Length: 604
Ligand code: F6R
Image 1 (cartoon, rainbow, N blue to C red):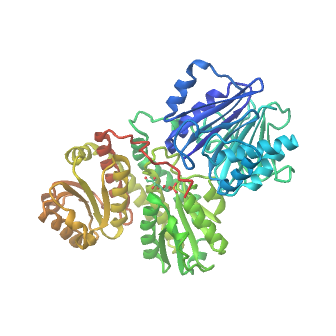
Image 2 (image 1 turned 180 degrees about the vertical axis):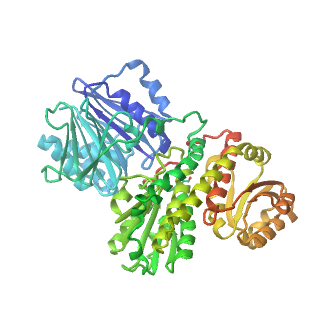
Image 3 (image 1 turned 90 degrees about the horizontal axis):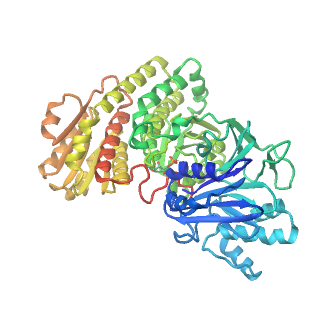
């Protein structure tokens, strides 16, 4: 969704801001813009569509500015057009904003009654004219920002520059925002994502909500300052070295980030073994036995993360006596679930910034539940809000379609289930993880087989993915992946549900991707035969050397499951990731940035 990058320093800020924005393109956006300050004049340049449109727009202007803020917008209030794009500015301030001002209408009417004219349909302009109004009365920039911030409701992050001084300001509530510092050059940055600052800032500051951050590159003491809402100095932030590497911002020879991320999986599985299953790492899994007496875990997440949650539910219920309720975060938060403070809240998220998931965590926290996350982004809002976090260590995931994060979430969920049951047999798990890594490598080395299946089926009318038991979530995930990147209609079903309705869709133009592993083999195999009997096209993913399945399927992909006691869902999913990728590639869609999608869904 929306992305923010700001710069204050001795060099030309337009360069890192445009580079930072291009790195945030993966999050999904529909317009972009920057604001610069030259000799006390603020200018705003913005364009609907891809960042390339903005670059073309400013190409011949040779913009240079020590202060620059930029934004990629994903429309919430108002149509997609140049006017509604950010930054929004007037003769005194330029601002960019991520999030939503929930009481914008009331504030807008008030400001209009004071004679302020609005140019756009955005809620953001309310913040602009409110700080302007207060500044005209007080001549105090910090106070104007703080007082306006107190008035606005909703989750937002704002970055502001002004024509009076060389400072850049930011403030946020439950929305991602970091400050960056290059400690050699004293250049300062602000961004909604530390990833935009890789190679620019070596220190990343994570301010808490309601902290006014001030970047003043001309300061002789501290170029970054933090203040509380009462104006006093704040220490309410964490600071970390920026350990992300430049390699993470390139495709490394692959055609797409998604493919690169699929291929990263064996390495990441091995990394998890070092991080959680080494003598030292296993400490992170200690102290979970104290939860073994819990009766109920509320597990909430969205999309792919929820699919991982379904696999994890099975793990936990298999290993322990704890019941696990799984919910779409967007449903859980509104359906008034029965929550007892003795329950546990478990939230799964790649970004750690998904609005609905965060709302569920907050809801559980308000009910005094202990909350736990399985999350990728260290320092994300979910990470900071939960009582305990298990990081999945997937590195930055750029492809909008989540792949490697799913794998890592499932594996960390498996470790959690073992920890809850005080049943971590380190050597056994280590062996399975290492076997899994090698088997995933085998699957990846057979990518051409999957490509050939993709070629044969890519233009069919529709796709039904089926699986039973532990493979049912993989059917859901396989269908989600295909529809989001290939723009074809795909559904995931529990195989046993086919004859309760969807089987009427089956004909010679309909594909059934059936995951038929040794668990519940006979039942799942009969469901596939029902499809064949109705002339459906059967693509089966099953155990290697299963002649019966191979003969009955139009296309068959066999996997060696030997030694994969718990992790078959991970490997079957990798096959489906590659299948979706190749179908999308043949169709020529924008694989890394599928239409209408955003990587991190920070609005409900
Ligand atoms: C699908 C996908 C989404 C996300 C969902 C939750 O490929 O990426 O379904 O899984 O938006 O996002 P996170 O995990 O960041 O909370």
